Length: 216
Image 1 (cartoon, one colour):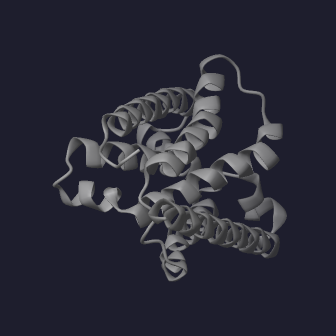
Image 2 (cartoon, one colour; image 1 turned 60 degrees about the vertical axis):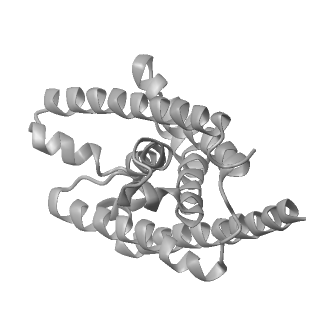
């Protein structure tokens, strides 16, 4: 289906609405839990935005919604780029994989938290990858562009370590340098960067093959 078709716009509207609803739900849950545990409202907000899952889901919502709501704006044009949408696909794919393989065993969410959990870690990654396959322009994908894609996850890991050292709170167990040591945390970060790199190579290769097939 061609870009900008009614089917694409409907998919983007649904994806943005679902993603935004899940983010708002998780925000309400997080703020409720953190304030009950003695954290300030500002601290709860910072805690909420300190998860790669949240940041990646925000990027997904912007990727769907910005070109749809404001196609002529700088934000709309940025998130309309095939390379940007592909980077977002990479981020949300890693979110789903890491959660399924490592993190889902560490807790048992119930009720509304389970709804938010399933949406943010499973539904959103699957829906966005389908969106990328069906609608995103992949003709301009280049292997050289992957270096820029790695800036965000690398910077996030550095932020998580620095914030953890300052306040004693780490978003994920594999980054808890206070428990596993900075050496192991560094090894885990390198493994994550390697995962992003390998998956990025696979996504670019697949995208370029799909673009050639579409031209043929």
